[in-house]
Amino acid sequence: MTSAVLGIIGGSGIYDLPGLEDVRDEAIKSPWGEPSAPLRRGTLAGLPIVFLPRHGKGHVLSPSDINYRANIDALKRAGVTDLVALSACGSFKEELPPGTFVLVDQFVDRTYKRETSFFGRGCVAHVSMAHPVSPLLRVRLEAAARAEGIAVSDGGTYVCMEGPQFSSLAESLAYKAQGFSVIGMTNMPEAKLAREAEICYASVAMVTDFDCWHPGHDAVTVQDIIRVLNSNADKAKALVARLARDFPREHEPCPVGSDRALDNALITAPEARDPALLRKLDAVAGRILGK
Image (tube, rainbow, N blue to C red; front, top):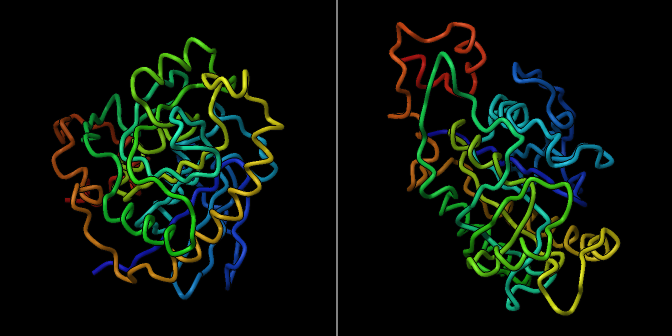
């Protein structure tokens, strides 16, 4: 059995994780560049935790400037088996008002400026994203939220836009008409890269606003969002503390194969693989490349 190591990616408003014990910061070097910040290691209720602020300390990185590959690679090197992404988002549904936590189970990727894969020229791989969220991790998050009295909705589709600007009214109305639940700027390609790295992934989309489709507010502003962010951040920290307390100490095999996503994904013949790329894949794909 593999010991569980819980990774937490903090989104807007969550730049630290209070309550960690035995804390130490670790700057892990990645062949994919610089992660958003040094990893913060510690324990919660005896469970190993690795925390990373997605936007860096002080929120210095826009969604398009985040090095998602370096972040996921560093978390993999740190031994993370299960990864929870905390993210601010806008809502397309009246029944998902600000303050609600949505445990999304599907994504639509509308980004276009980001590196979306560890693989490519010299070593091609195709992982399944049919079920991008680890169902066991989502179940545990729902139980933790309900235990803490946090308004939570299980399931929904997160559309990831490029940003950093908020949606136009036409875009907002179009996404709402397509039945999407929430909109954000950061869960893609994060979820795709976590799958390639064989890390179980789940997202907590924390609603801050109704986007601009809602007649109650004509436009979204940072000032409006910050007011809700602070409340959501406090609830997110309580959620993580409860999740850690009840989390299994041994990693649970994922029903949708998140932790064995590369078993049948590599298509490039071994003799044709680029040695330089293989060296960069030592952490992400070492399990399968070593066979």
